[in-house]
Amino acid sequence: MKSADEIREWLRATIAHELRLAPATLDVHRPFAYYGLDSLTAATLSGELGDWLGREIPPDLLVEHPTIDALAERLAADHSEPQPSRPPRSDRPDDDRPRWGERAVRFLARCAVRASSIVEVEGRERIPAVGPALFAVNHLHILDALWMSTVLPSRTRFLVAEEFRTKPVVGRLLAAGRVIYIARGRADREALERAVAVVRGGGAVAVAPEGRLSPTGGLITGQSGVAYLSSQSGVPVIPVVAYGQERAGASWMRLSRVRVRVRIGDPIGAPVCPATARDLEHHAAGIMRALARLLPPAYRGIYSEPGAQ
Image (tube, rainbow, N blue to C red):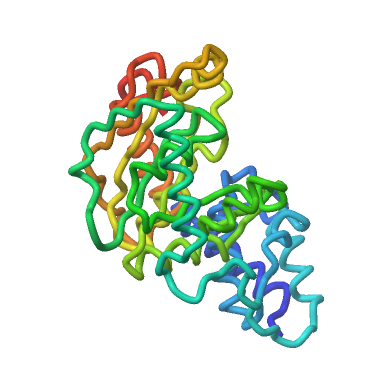
């Protein structure tokens, strides 16, 4: 077992490396949030810490013990034996080949889009026909995945918030579509590892960097998850935007089809791996600016100005 002092010094050194600071400048009694450690960094940190200690570290432990000192004391006091790896999630497929349920969901999605929408696509030639792909998409409507699933390759897996798993109807459709569920508000290392594995295996993953539906109709702050996936897989990020779907309700009330425009941009090269948290944040900001350039000015939100964020 490692002592509290050993764990404390390891945490101080690792976090300092992520932030590109001298270890001595970190106060072990300050909350992790003070130093700008987000959920992605917490996921990476918990994984590296677990490897060093030889046992699995629950991601919520960093939330329950939010300082270097508190976490070191908690881990040093835990004398449990190394734990086996978590069993696979029940929604983990045996392989990445489309199943009948997924094909059925995509067929229904195409039918629904044709009946309810007029979709114009620009830049479709930028989507690779085969091989790994990583897409960053904006998020204007709760049904964005409906339109995106008819444009992106059939092998694409969407990252979806965990809370949708238990929705009576939507949850069943998402499960059939083989999405990757990810927990919001905590470090979900397993979901990130699954997404990286899909891309490395030649599949495709779509991520909404904003992490939630835009409350303003414009882009909001992007998170660094998609940059992390790009760094770990070595696959460039393809920016994809859709707009007009936010008016779907009004159009459908008039019994008319909503016009949705989808634009696909040039790939953005992967950041160097290993990348620090600040490297990933910088790269994520570049991805968000690329999304903004594909959108009309009214949709650019906080990325309206050159160099914003």
